[in-house]
Image 1 (cartoon, rainbow, N blue to C red):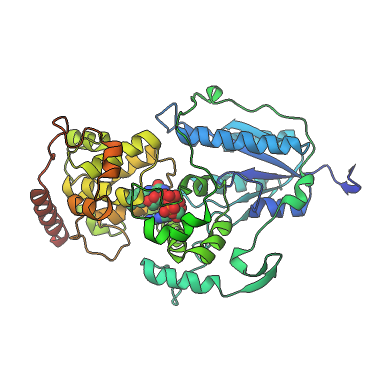
Image 2 (tube, protein in one colour):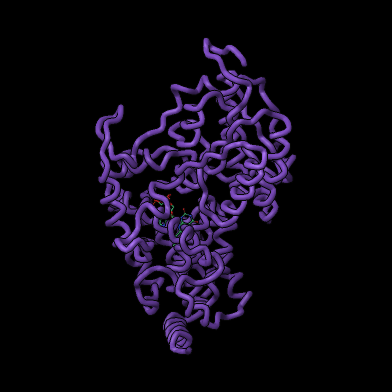
Length: 453
Ligand SMILES: Cc1cc2nc3c(=O)[nH]c(=O)nc-3n(C[C@H](O)[C@H](O)[C@H](O)COP(=O)(O)OP(=O)(O)OC[C@H]3O[C@@H](n4cnc5c(N)ncnc54)[C@H](O)[C@@H]3O)c2cc1C
């Protein structure tokens, strides 16, 4: 037992395992760990994930490294520290159990198939050592079974899901320090308990180079957005030339911000912004209920589409050299910034799958490799939506016309000129495929494939 701050604690330690929740503030699992006693934080740079990344200067790794360094610094300012390891969690945890008297491990849940399998294996090995494994909902507002149809089945169409989601939000109101709040928006403040972190000397942390990575030169978007932007979101969110969306995707992805805080803001400032947060929950529950979407279309008959094997065309799309300026602008924005505006994600994804008839899985993988805010559930959902094979009720024969999209959303070509400076000069290539031809080919191919069988 130790006497610390007037309180007696046993030497047994509770661990909090940071993953997609890289913050101290309003972190559900961390809050519960700190409520339970003194806590040692840990983060594992997971070799299972890192070894699949082809780019040494992967911006996501730099982002995480920065976020972990900031967490560690903050903990050190409190006289605590963070254990940071690099390796396979299934090997790291047994080593931690050897080095420490671990009583319980607290963490927030993840829903991706790899994370589920890893967590099941970790839970098992902890159980063998009689160490409790406590997991919490933190990453989304509602987990997969919280918003279900009246018959108990998952929703597969967004609009009724979103109605139930909103109704569920208001179903349980309780008093909080911020006044009456829907239960699901309650905060988990950890500030009062921060002194409960295990006292420790600063600990070493692997550098990017130690893990075989380099620092990315990308500039990361701030974690804060002005109220005005959220207020105007409904008017500006579709215009790629203006800063009309939050840019928070990467922060939601790695949990450097709290979804509950942003949802609270959205409720008071913009129902349109709230709707986008609901899309995020929607795709997360689709992935959790239907994990086969990772490799297969949600609507299985779409696996019959004979996608074109056209590596040169795919390359032109990746490089932003299709001769369709709005498509090229989006693809180049992605390459230069790790971001692409949502409207343009829809246009470029539609172009690849419908104009070029190239398998959505190739486009999905390209986005996964390059998007700073890459999230398996939302990326997969967005790609299947674009290819027409996902949960969306819209028929496949709605094909985006890039010229019409440009007229509506970038009529002065401000966005196009930013990313395609040679647009309008002889240096800019002609369209790689005629729009009318591509549209007819797509309709014919989809129709035949879906009629078969
Ligand atoms: C083909 C395609 C691929 C996509 N890939 C991803 C991805 O890998 N990761 C990702 O987070 N989003 C993805 N999206 C959804 C959307 O484009 C991004 O969330 C958004 O552009 C991120 O920019 P922002 O943070 O400024 O968003 P804002 O417009 O400010 O929206 C706020 C937040 O709401 C959520 N959100 C907004 N739109 C959607 C949506 N349609 N689906 C799910 N969540 C949404 C995101 O968390 C976003 O950060 C994809 C969309 C398409 C069409």
